[in-house]
Image (cartoon, rainbow, N blue to C red; front, side):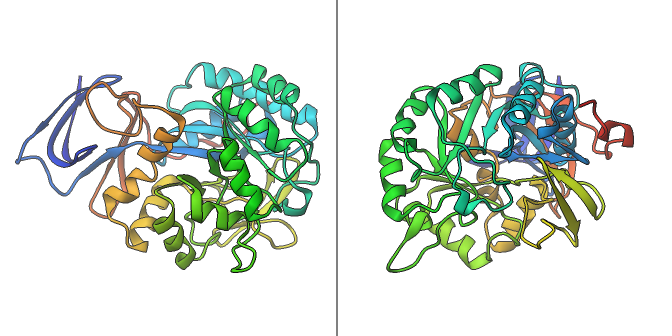
Length: 375
């Protein structure tokens, strides 16, 4: 049994005290003598991760294990492996590579909860960093992918023919449908929400913008959404727009959209079938447009606090809200019976310890050999 002491963020608020755990949290008690300058928060849950440590989920093989280990070192205790639009054999390869990593958590790695299928059911008009290999979604195609690895979140453009009718069928499969990479109208977004869509993929990015005459997909999200993703790297979205979304969407949660460049020096990396370039903290295509990020969840927390959020509010948007979105009552919160997914931070919000399902995670960077999985 392990014991941690400090200011503990519980669902009811802060408690200065002690927490005992094995794989799950066993006991939590107040203790005024615990160090108040040490914060104990729920582990971060990232529902949109493409890569890290020089490898990309789309490589298949053991890439997902490397990615899970790299993000765990930054406080991510659970995550979704996220695909790109690609030729179908490449998507199948990625899903086959994800399946064993989802079935059994790798030592020192975050728990892979399933798949976020970001491509290929997108609009060719709003590809962003996605390659032009889009497909029209069908139930049979989704079922084929889902049989290889469990899809928890699926991004689609609601205006594409057949997609609106598909949404309730996917929701019945317990797949959260997110609207994104869409050239659709406000009306398309509202219709998709009424059909059972659950959220929005990287809000503001890859979708029609808000205009007072044509509110677009962004307008549908701000007016009607309970949940939406946001990339808080202070590059993808202006802080003012972030504040608008934080006021408008009750359970806005944050993701990294991290690529293979995460945790790596400036240089050239893979993003699905494309090459991207990391420079000065940004990840871009050769043409200069943003292409995912090099963000980690611990930095996301610090960015939100810098933006003006209280630490407890920032934490909920990185842990409790994504857990709630997936219907996970035993993750994203610190209470007896929940998984012991924990991050310990100092007063400067720098990571001191990370625990995934009770296992202490080493915070040292991955070795070079770990960055080159078999493909």
